[in-house]
Image (cartoon, rainbow, N blue to C red; front, side):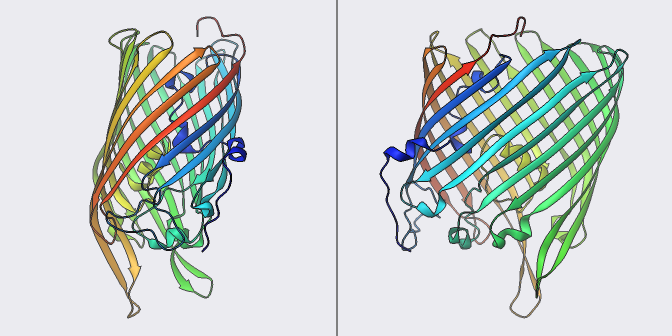
Length: 430
């Protein structure tokens, strides 16, 4: 493979990647204005772009380190109407140009739309749909990841129906659909779709706190779990049954806590090594001790399908083939001055890995293992005007795992971004 280099200037017209989206200040991630339009140009240098194992050299024609020039064009609206109802939507087009490993140039998108509604009585609900397409994170477990640009498409739809008032006892029912697709045929076995339904009761003693209990069921399938040859595949269908306990508590302007503890099991028809029984859940704590300083702490423990979507919401993740993932992330944001903000974060993930591979004798080999990943980041942003933001971030990633399902990986990155934001008149009281 011959590596092609291109001049940098035309690449500044490209749109931003998912990994660069995190560089924009959190305060601007969701504008409080009724509409916005945003353009971003970013550049990121990564010392191990291909996520190769420590000590491994890049294959001929590839570069281990690389620089990605990206940009985004985004627009959306967030409109209140009626008595506390809201409609919102935003979409972005992005493209990435990889300076050395040009094979991985890619384009993608992200679109989100939703509706928070209520009737004149006690019935209310939420609707939300999401689609996202971008380059899948590199996976040290399979060398074939370098054969082509592997794009992953995430699709999700959720609906919640609620009977009850803001304070008191509420009955809730929810439905969801999720799907993951890869463009590379080699990853057919990791594509899956899943439907879910839940029902429960939630008690709100005040508008600042609630406790709830519910039951949840999931049914999904890996339709191409095993290649039988001749264009035939064996599917791996799975089901999940869970009991959920939830709680929320907030102190206006200071602290907000959301927690869920689930007990249940997941059973697979063919990939029985991925079966799981036990406790899962999540804790999200947002604490603002002062007007300038804010902390966010998130702890999750989820089966692989749920873990994939949780991690994908905040950035790229390795191609999931885990049984269960446990992750902890702590982030801080500090307003150094009216126009300068600094941020820091550290996240750790532990994965219980499992994968089924064909054996040379025609049978199957089941592989098991674990890996641990720690990612730390430090960044700052400067807002010389209300509509313009400059930011830079440095990051370091360390993964410790054993072949063949994982490997020791180390990588450092440095990136900067320029964002121009246009927005409508801010809504009063928002």
